[in-house]
Image 1 (cartoon, rainbow, N blue to C red):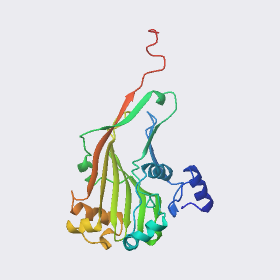
Image 2 (cartoon, one colour):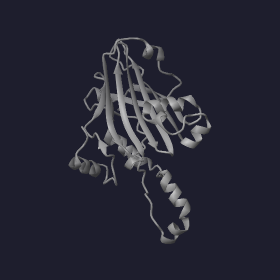
Image 3 (tube, rainbow, N blue to C red):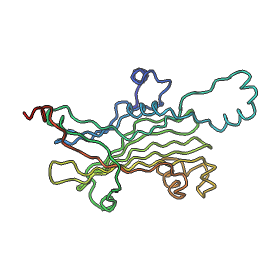
Image 4 (cartoon, helix red, strand yellow):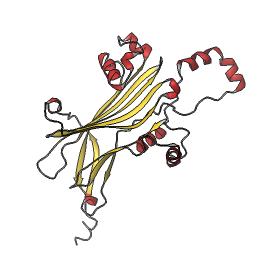
Length: 266
């Protein structure tokens, strides 16, 4: 359920009095995956995603009508010292999820971090026709950008007998201007013991103006970019044009040193 006015005001306060928030804000929605033995938890929340949006300080995007207006009135704007939006009103975030460890005695000795890797996901396992034990899609926030497009952050989770898979995807379309996809995929095969399976994380950013993408052979602004799935297909068709960032990480879990280890040999 989207947050009401009172909840939204409180949310803005928690974000340090944010100038604005998306119209559809699912502040209570979240996905949490917790490993019982180690206490490691991977979570995905709207608050953390918007904190990442605030920290990124992405330059504001101008819609086509504003670009046209500015190009014909540059002297007037300069003469009157007009002020434009100084924040990213598209809510573009590089949020890839949060990681925490339980504060219990056993889990307090666990150290976990993401490290670069050349390992990839076992896509044959993902594509296998195994039964889906659990599936869900969790909306975190969405905005129609004052009827200038759409900004949307959603996370999907799928659990099969041999693995689990998560996709968190930020999708932005500013009509007649640009499209962005920021996707983070996490994959983990199950182990037969209490250890954490090899969690692989792939982060991919794709974007471009409609002019750039059209020159590369992508469809023009329209139905091809109606939603995140169709936009992903359109961007994939012209790859590597539009590919801005690609990385693979692996979750490395180590047993930390106890608080009294190494003190005078006692």
